[in-house]
Image (tube, rainbow, N blue to C red):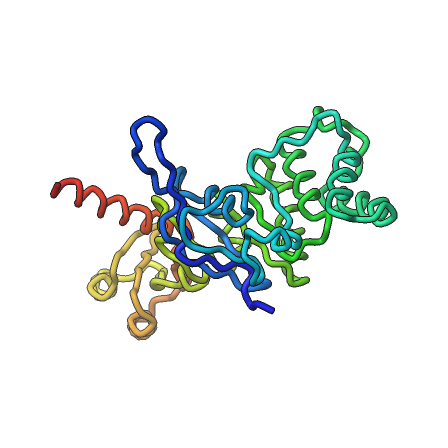
Length: 318
């Protein structure tokens, strides 16, 4: 049994313009692994190749080169997709179905027995907050409600791997929290969750690992905790005297003032402790000490921005 839910090796997809013959490398040699039981976020700007990458995982489009496997099986094998639940970004369920009818239809396609469907569908509707809407036609659902019933559809056969494309798109804050709670329960049961999303805050709150792709290539991958690790310490002192302020300013990376106090940013723990010793010796009070961190948005912008600057530099030389 493979320890990886997803493995790709130099996966590429090239599209050719029909008239000019110009090639567009939507995905360009991506090698990526997603371990079983983890929550993984796929990030990238519009047009980066995220959706094409997901479509190749699901064998909805065939790679030009490279290989992709799900739980050790090549994605070209229909058996590989059996343990996968999928919620596309722009899903289109028949609007004449009720919520219950749609779930019953897709559960039957997934091989769930009639007896199990009768038990499971009310539970799923309740879990996504739609228990009162099961008998209502989908044509009357809001966009957020359609996202939630779509999530229920993806879960109908208890998948081992859940692939979600913008799962919180159009969902209000209460609904986003509800979806996150559901996914956390699935994670605790060992389900692998792969999310393609633009909502970086949601990804940072939920995912343990991320990959950033840009212009079809893998730009960065790693654990969210490591990528957003602390980069310094912020210390606030209560009304420091001028001499003390000057000494701390000399040692700090930056200084700011607020409400009679002063805030200093130190790069290392050693610098912070030295500053605290100086403050205590002077008789001044420390108001607060706060570790500073990157956000996932900071990491994303630095990664994508660096790639954009490198491309601009190459074009300038040309």
